[in-house]
Length: 483
Ligand code: TQI
Ligand code: CA
Ligand code: ZN
Ligand code: ZN
Image 1 (tube, protein in one colour):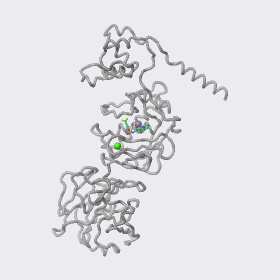
Image 2 (image 1 turned 30 degrees about the vertical axis):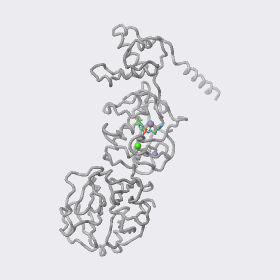
Image 3 (image 1 turned 90 degrees about the horizontal axis):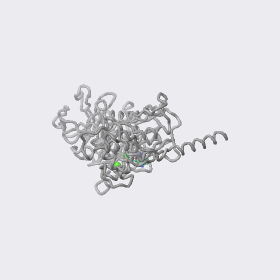
Image 4 (image 1 turned 135 degrees about the vertical axis):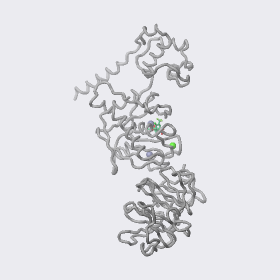
């Protein structure tokens, strides 16, 4: 015990004496060949993390990394920021100096919390509508691989239950103490390692998440947030992924962690077992007001209810609620904010999940949407589905995923559509009361969930068991909206 304490003191003493200052800074032979530029480049490489691979060539002056570095150095040393190798700057560069870089460093959170195991699980709880799920999945995977490559950590994905790192998209208030703030500003946040919500990463779905640099890049922000999830706080090294400025000029194709990020994460977890030596550097919802539907109004009814990529959408007038998790408060949006070409006051909505398509009906027209995209070739006439000309609108629709049949409700009748043959089944329309006893026409909306059909009619909702062919419960329509 005594011994280890003394050993540790020793280690601290050695560390304290490590920075070797006031050595002669540069190799003078290089200075003789190309006095100014080589001196500057060598100096900036040594003390300002100028990439060794940066070659001088044809570059726009304002984006030349050397010019930027010269500016950074001038600022740090209190010189006039000219970006040029003027005499004052050259004079400072030629002076003896401390061998420790002038640039900042990684930090960990207070108390340096870390995971005390090397295998971690993660779960993507929900998705943004900005990107196909596959793109989000691979952005997260790639972001985790960035950290996996330089540590002993490994990650595996789970689809249910509690994972070490729960990843979700949310807007505004979402159940923690850090509400998101609409488009811009805060993009995401993540908690340092620990139990419960610790380690989790939340992404602001009011940002426009993209695969490229045109919006907020999913991969880049995920890699940064997962750095927080693993225990890194911010670095003041401008090259670092953990530097708290969104770097839109980052060349994503050649993304590398900086040495500083690697040093930071390895200070917590060490290097990967295979490379013990040299670290590998692969390297705003609508404001409430008159005319805005109120979520918990006991009289609330819906125009249409449908699903989209695992979320449930409740449409009302120009608005919709978006529910993506059973115990999270639904989001409220303008329909036009998601799908500018869709009308308001819809009639019906249903999803064919095998086609990743949600169909939206109003009057004698319907639209097909995939995420945020309205598909080309729409709207189409409902008569192209086979409805007789006397039918002017659909009241409600629901698609049975297993049976691949879609039910269309019109007044007191219903039709059944075969998703495989893409045609209305023979023998229809039939009377709703005959096949759905207890369901009174006319219905506003229908939703299939948990094996039941939920028929919405005004402010009441009927739960119908299609196998037992009977009504099982009567509920308020807005019971889905946590009222
Ligand atoms: N979100 C902040 C972030 O993750 C949240 C935050 C602020 C934070 N201070 C913190 C988290 C201190 C941990 C410790 O940094 S953010 C970037 C950046 C953000 C910023 O939306 O500002 C990225 C999210 F700055 F690097 F661009 C992701 Cl990549
Ligand atoms: Ca935001
Ligand atoms: Zn949060
Ligand atoms: Zn951050």
